[in-house]
Every structure is written in structure tokens, then in C-alpha cells.
Image (tube, rainbow, N blue to C red; front, side):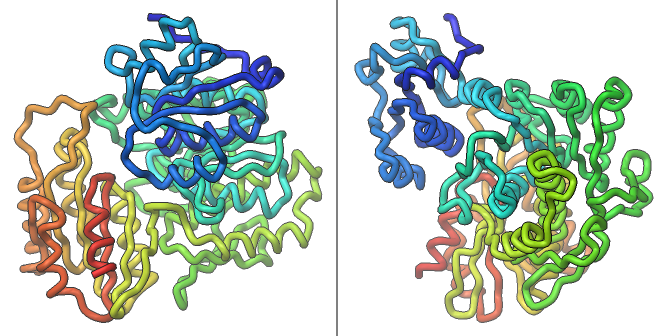
Length: 502
């Protein structure tokens, strides 16, 4: 089996070649198909019959696609076939057919890497925060008038409900994923690094493994490349330190609050005085107000909750600032551009499954969030507590992967403490992992219940194997003034939709 990991996209663009996408409804694959379509390539594809939000996008663009897989679907004159990482040639007849026909076959992440080589590209990476940072980057690029394209890992309301934004052909910013080192296919001239800590334990068993992957990614930067990193995050700071020890030709650009916690002092740049230090922070009337050192007179506002979202905004402002200077010169941040950036941030309402507000019914706010790592869960719940101080916060959480749950069991239990009431469910398994241990959803329930009871909170943690089995109990519990949020990378999100529509 031969996969083509290097492809001259310039040549394909010049002849408006045919490109076939296998698994075209996936968020990332659909987004790349859209970018290829806008570049003038002849795009088509296939997927399952299950309806996703991407169906509407593909239909609106007029991109034809089949709703099942069949070898006969593959155009024999296709110049390239791109496939989702969920499929392989041993099981997918279309991938096997492409190989038989001699059509170059690229995994999505490799195709994204080839696409990134066509632009002045920036990779946005991190265990947490990369989707929101990428989405905020897009709205700031638009506000600054930068000729750029952006690809986020989720649908973004400010992008018209899509994952892509096309503003021009000079710059490209994309969310890049650490899992299985997929981001190593990307060709960045600069990298934004939001956070580094233990995750994806099925592939990175120890923290050092995932840290070293981020180091390897950062070392791909060309001479005079920039590493924009979170100075509050010990993992990001450690990666920066290791990279700069090997590469004195790179520029490190810190952003953050300048944390003071003793436990973070070994690697965090606690007292940095860079341009992108968050110099003030305040929450009132369901808005977050903050300032940056480089813009002392500008008050930025966010309608999405949490200090972590302010960090994401600071990262996006840092990246945008680098390109504004490159595009317009030293005085690129004119008063008009800066005001447009302020307005763009205040108008940002988030992205799909990132503290996504479904609506309000009977005085209850319904929300959905993808947070599936203890740190993301805690920071999201703390942000909601700060944003909505008068509301009870009731959570349905479904843990994703047995290996992650087992490795971070105590952290998961403690991360849910900011909630008033928690409903837990079975673990949402992943086909990519082989787990033979004894941890399951009930284990997490018992651990979380014990943590809550230790703090004096009894009768606040519940368990139903299936998420929908909690609906009747929740209907009896929810009252005016509550906030109900489904959290996790599992399939408990329909529970919130059901309660909201009932």
C-alpha cells in the first residue's frame, strides 16, 4: 500500500483538478473540502447517511457527495483522494479503489499540511483552548483586514456557522491537533501554544511523551519563526524553554495573567512584562472586561465566560498583532483597526460545543460544552460560576475514553466541584483504545460522590448509565434561575436538547 504524503497542490490548482474526499462530513474534512472548493478545485466526496451539520454546508456550496461508500463512486480521473483518519484501505472500499486506480491518497492531516505550505501559515496548538483561540483569531483577522484563511476545529457562529473563513490568499491560520502527532504534517511559520499537559493516554502514556511531541512541532519552525505561548501554563513554558535551548533563532512571545501560584513557578514565566500581559480583568453584567499591556487605553470585552477565554483572546490578539505588523508595518494597529478588534471580540458568541448557549426556557439556561479534560472542565465551570453568580449550575458529564478516565480519575472527580449538582454516566468508549482495566462510569461516580461529601455536599452527585435516563429526574429538579450544561466529548449532548425542547 502506497500513500502519497507529498503532493504539489500548486499544480493541481493550476488545472482545476478533481479531488475526492472520503468521510467528507467530518468537521475537519468538510472544512478542507470547502477551502479546496474556494481555491477552484473540483471537489466531491462520500460519507455515511447520518445527518451532520456539515450536510447543510456541503449542499449550500454545491459540493456533490454520496451517502454511502462504494468503489464505483471514486472518479477514475481524480487527481487526489483525501480520507478521514477514521478510515483505512483494508475496510473502506473507496480507499482501496483509489489505490487500485493509482490515485494519490492523503490522510486529512497530511492534506492540511500540504495546503498550509501554500501560505504564510500559523498553527494553533494545545491540549486546551485551540478551537476558541482559532475562532477568535478569525474574527480578529477580519477586523484587521488581513488577507487570510482560517480553519477551526468546530463550527463558529462568526464564520456563518462554518469551520472556515476565507478573507484572502496570503495568510493561513489553522487549529492543529497533537493526537498521534498529526500536527507534524503542518508547515507553520509561527505557532500559538495554549497549553501542554497529560492527555491522549492511549497514545501518549506519560506526560513527557506529549510534551516531547509539542517540542518536536515547535522545532519545525523556520529561522526567525515565532512561538506564541501561554506564560501561565507550566507545560507550555516548559516546551518553550526546551525549544529555545535548541533554537536561538526563534522569537518567543508570551501572553497571560502572570500567575503567582507556587506550584507553577518552576516553569511558568510568573512575572513577565510582555506586550500581551493581561493587566486587568473584571466580570460584570455577563461580560468579561480586560486590558493588555500593549493597549493600555483599550478595554476588551467578551460575552463568553471564563479566564481561560480571556487567555484565548490574548493569544489571538498576539498572533493578529504579529501579522498586522507584517502586513501594515510598525504602525499597523491604527485607532480604527484597534476599535474594530474591540468590537469583534465583544460580538463573538463562541463556537459549536464550546460553552454553546442553546437557549433559555422557563428561566433555565441550557448550554453544551465539549470540555473532556479535568482542567478544561474546572476552568469552564469556574467561569460559569463567575459569569452567572446567581444561578445553580447543574451538570451532565460523560467521560471520554477509558484510558483518560483511569489516568486522571482523581482529577476528574475534583474538577466537578464548582458545580452544584452533577449527573454522571457510562464512559464514552473510543474505538482507538484497548483497555482492560477496571475503571468505568460507576467508578468515576463513586470517586466524585466521595469528593463532594468530603466537602460537605451530600446528595448532589447522581448516576444513570445512559444519559437520557436522567431526563425525568432532571425535569423534576430544574427550576427557574438554573443553568444546565452537558459536558464531555461523548453523546450526552442530546439530553440537553431534549430538556430544552420539552
